[in-house]
Length: 221
Image (cartoon, rainbow, N blue to C red; front, side, top):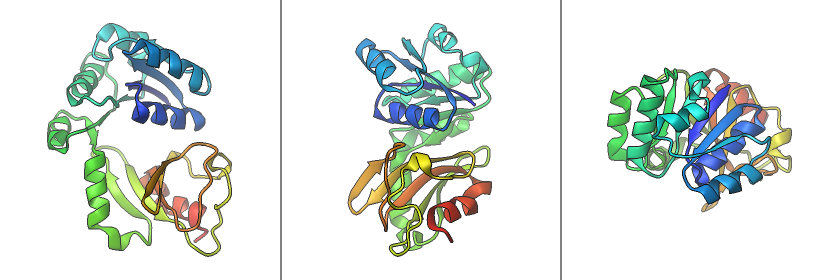
């Protein structure tokens, strides 16, 4: 899968790293020159890094967006995310556009235009509202199109089958990416070298058809 990401901040760089570690091809567009150079040296696999504005068609073209399977806008500016997603869909025909939405009030605008909007504020609020159900695998956010979802799984306190193992060494289902761990009051980003502990809550991005397989891989149940 070829993914073009607009943005080079923490969210975008983390997503790029996760996708690269899972074997996907990634291009990243970042307008700040120093950040672009930094990412070029830090991200694994030497992905394509384009120094430019993701709202400019010329830089989207430089990133090869015309052959992308997915375009992700992950900057901290909702206006930029909206413009770049629309440009990738309308001008270049990218079949799927996903946007980080910083202000939940803007979600409906993205959805109306056929852009899959992901708001961390909305996800966290749903987690709080549905806290009583986290003992089992639970869908936090179902993307508007397709069959992908953000889910959570609580690891058992006793007989944890994945604890102490590197995430990169786990036998996870296809199309499943571990995003973060909730450990007590801390939220911990997941990297290939991350090791889980008993009682961790795992936040994952997965194909809905593989939710049961994901639970079994993480809990042994």
